Length: 153
Image (cartoon, rainbow, N blue to C red; front, side):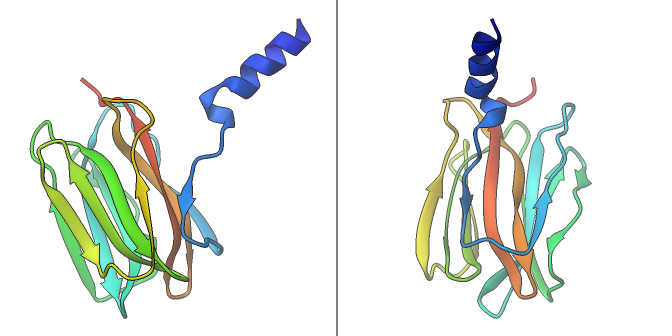
């Protein structure tokens, strides 16, 4: 019985490490789970060719800003019932480019597409972006990962 319980726990999604893109290192961050609101936008700060910080809008509120201070930020707000459904980007020592695609066919782009590229999407059709996690150092975001779940009704 204990063996079956152990196998069930190890096979559950919470035990599998989620993919982070970039070399990582530095201070870890993760947006909070929100079981009452969907992601409604993103704000990204760039500078010196790097992604310096990221911030999600969940419902009508912005999460904490994760990363380092910067001078220039861009916002991309989702329309009602619109969701982020895929992401791609590029990194060197730091994240340099981030592109998010929506289920309305729109694209949010931040930074410059230089470096090793990556692509991220949900494991199951119908899932959408519900959170971010990653790491940052003195100059900016060193690794970024995406949490995908089904949207709230």
